[in-house]
Amino acid sequence: MILVDCNNLGFASTATAAKKGKPHGAVLDMLGRMRNLVRENPDRKVVALWDGRSWRHDAYPPYKAGRAKDPKMVKLKELWVEDRPALQRGLALLGVQQISAKNMEADDLAARLSAAKVKKGGRVKLISSDRDWLQLVNEQITWIDPIRERTVTHLNFAEHAKIGDLYFNTPWQFIQAKALAGDVGDSIEGVGGLGPAAAQWIFTEYGSVQGLFNEGYLDGKAYVLFPKKFRDFLDSAEKLEAYERNLALVWLHSPHAPPIQGLTSIAQPFNRDAFMDFCEKRNFTTILLREAIWLAPFEQATKEQAA
Image (cartoon, rainbow, N blue to C red; front, side, top):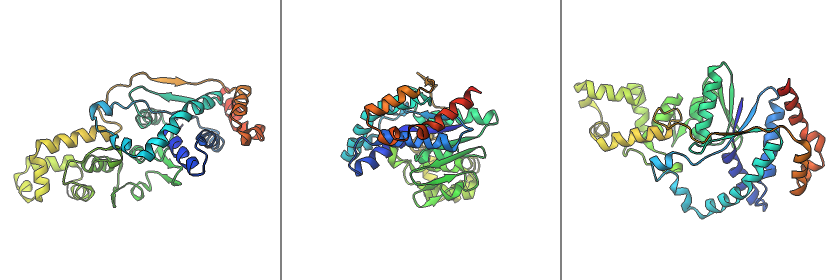
């Protein structure tokens, strides 16, 4: 299975197209990107994932609030919101399954869908430039960032799992470090005084934040030897609460996440004539002039799925 973060990549396509003086070029670019995925992975099902309104906005009101303060980001988002329905329509006509949920982001859906696939013995490719998806990587799950052209597996994870200037060895370390340091991009504040370097000290000395808790609370001698900022962390109900809150926000498999609401799956049959009419109305000449070649991967996928 291949899971595609459509909002993430669509926004990136909007930004690239806008720089080239084509403010509404994201739809054609994204259709081409999806075609390449289908062509390069004929034996895998490609699924487009869409963001709903994240439950995190209610759990933590500052979530992503910083993005609304950047006029350039706001303008690009407006352009992308205008184009998004057209891309959804085009993907539906090509027979690409699309999944969304009212209270979940695409990465939440990716976590659940990939876990279910792996449980059945399958393998998953995740397509997104959102580094939050890194935490899902394991022996069966690969993360591909098409914007920066990098592929991350369990074998090279530590070369890419960077927070600040420091790298982390495992997905669980990456998650805990983000919970401690916070996430500027998502406007999640850290616990205060404990950044990536502090996280690495914890992992080196005690293996995990829980290991720090165990030693600090159960071994009085160990507690006395902790650097002051770690003693302050253990002694502060406010900081401990902030860590637990952040862990729930950043960990895609957090047991504190709410149940999925309003799950929607669109899976229409491939409709060649309707798709070409869609392209004619939008003057997508790169598709119109290469109709047979351009559509071949989707026709092949349709045949294989039927078989």
